[in-house]
Image (cartoon, rainbow, N blue to C red; front, side, top):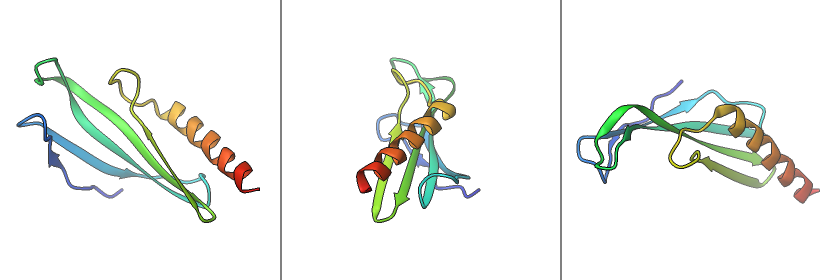
Amino acid sequence: MTDCPAQAAPDAPGVTLRQRLLPDTGYGDESVLFELRAPYRDANGDPTGGDEVHLVRAIRSGDVVTVLWEQGWESTSTERVQFDADSRRAIEAVRRWLA
């Protein structure tokens, strides 16, 4: 697993956003998966404990690249099982389109 740089949140001083690559196989001809992680914040922008996690997957099938970015419901974290199922449906739609 490779770590990507962390960065300061542009809208919240003192808050660090982190990204990292995750192992990924079985989607299209090739794919890459990474997570975006930030502390949960209250209405004032102050961290409340725990992290909000979102997933992004880029999938190549032939000459077509599809990018899926899931942000959860009302700022909740992404559920990996649902994101994987959505990714499988997306690549099947691309394959039908290419046929």
